[in-house]
Each structure stands twice: as C-alpha cells, then as structure tokens.
Length: 239
Image 1 (cartoon, one colour):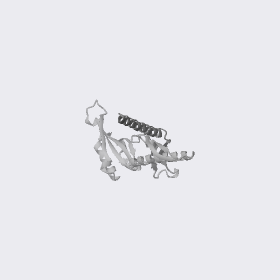
Image 2 (spheres, one colour):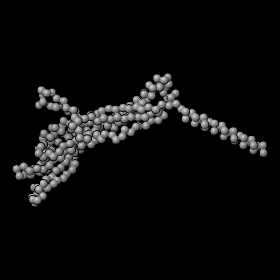
Image 3 (cartoon, one colour):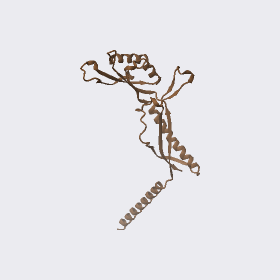
Image 4 (cartoon, one colour):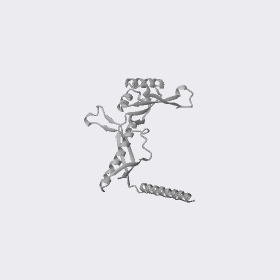
C-alpha cells in the first residue's frame, strides 16, 4: 500500500514540474519583445519587349480591289528588312465584311487581317510604317509591353524591401537603446490589382524630345516606363 502511495506522489510531482515548465515556456513566448515594420522598394524600367497589333484592310482603287495578299507581301518585305525573326511576327486574326450587301459582286467583300509584331526598339515601327501602303492600314496599336528581365527585377525588389524593413527596425530600436534580434515573420503586402502593363495603349505616354531648329531630323523617343513596387511586412525579436 505504501509503495502505491509513493508512486502516486512521484507521478503527481512529475506532472506539476511539467506543468510549471510548460507555463514558463508559454509565458516567454507570449511576452517576447518584438517589433513589426514595413519595408518597400520600387523601380522603373523601360520596356524592351513591345508587342504591336497591325491590321491591314483591303480597299478599292480605281475600281480595282487592292487585295490583302498584296498588302501582306508588302508587310512581310518590310519586316524582313528590319531583320525581325519569324517567331516575333505572326498572324493574329482574320475577318472581313461586305460593304455593299445589296450587290452580289465578289469584290464588295473586303477582308482585314491583323498581325502581332514584337519589337525591342520603338523607333523601328516608324521605319516599318513608312514602307507600307497607308490606305491599306486599318489600325496600329501597342497591345502589350514588358521587359525581358521583369521576373528578375521582381525578386530583387522583394529582397530590397525586406532589407529596408530590417534597416528600419534597427534604426527605430537604436533610438530607444534596444538591439534588433532575429526575424520572426515575413509576409508580402498585397497592393491590390497591379497595373496591367501588358494591355495598355501607350502612344499618348511617350516622352518626345527634339530641337526646334531640327524638326526634320530624327526624333528620340522613349517608351513609357514600367513601375514596379513591393512592400514587405517583417517582425523581428528585440534582444
């Protein structure tokens, strides 16, 4: 009987020691001193991947139809002269309409054809358009623009934002005589829906520079920049 009582007392003692240790550990975790800050980083890059949508349309000249085949051959020659590879020049869409449905002549049907063209240099588009029949051009617009290193820039900015958060936390703590500890939590702040730089029409946003005395000379054009910004939340312990 006495042996059983001793075993029970030993078990109760062990349980009490375990409970006290657990509570102490929880207290240390609960009351750990920490600081929460935000760090941000941003940059602007000039696109080196500009996607154009060019639409050619058939039209009548001296009662003869200038066919889409003729216009397309003209465009292909102009693209070849610029040294643009085939993978950067594709057909995007084909459509047409009958401008005078009351007449049953085949020439009344006018076709249109759109093409997707990728350029690294915005000024090449001017050279290309000069070689095309302007009456056969229905529209030209920028459909997308990006940068070949956009993902690399995104990663670099996130790291810079995290470093900025650490620097801010260290600066704030130094002002009250405290020291920065290890990082406890890191999370990226959502900035909402980002600007869709891959679906903007940017002709109205280009920067144009020229000398008044040299209007006939070449024009230096810079495409609108892509703005990237990231914000990081970071929590650090205070030593």
